[in-house]
Length: 86
Image (cartoon, rainbow, N blue to C red):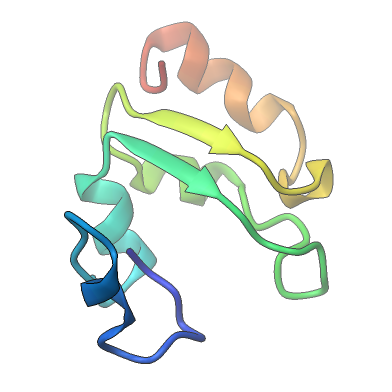
């Protein structure tokens, strides 16, 4: 779990979770990355090439947020084609 707006300790209320200190640490260890953010100036284009490259190989990406969270759709094409993402 990573949420820069939640205080430490809230993860103890969720079964089987632990807190990490950065998105980089979360991405490198997660089999599934699911994005749940509002669209605003901070999250617009959040998912870009750097974001995807931080992810673990063969991880899955789930975007439940708005489409503009993706920098552009091609960010996902090559990683899916070569098997970086599943």
